[in-house]
Length: 68
Image (cartoon, rainbow, N blue to C red; front, side, top):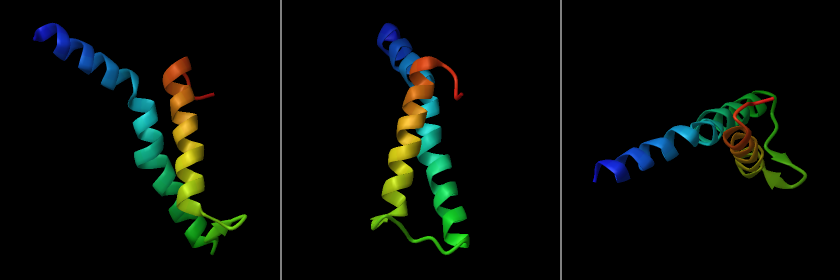
């Protein structure tokens, strides 16, 4: 049981950049774009674009271990 909990905790900690990208950076970018009056980008809702961009960026950060 403890081994399974340890693996789950390790997975969660390595995936934190992905969750940070989805839960913080995407909503932040949507709010910033809303302040500038941007509602869609190329006919696509800004939420969709932000979640894709920052989800991928957070996934890459989780995989490589760095944001840049």
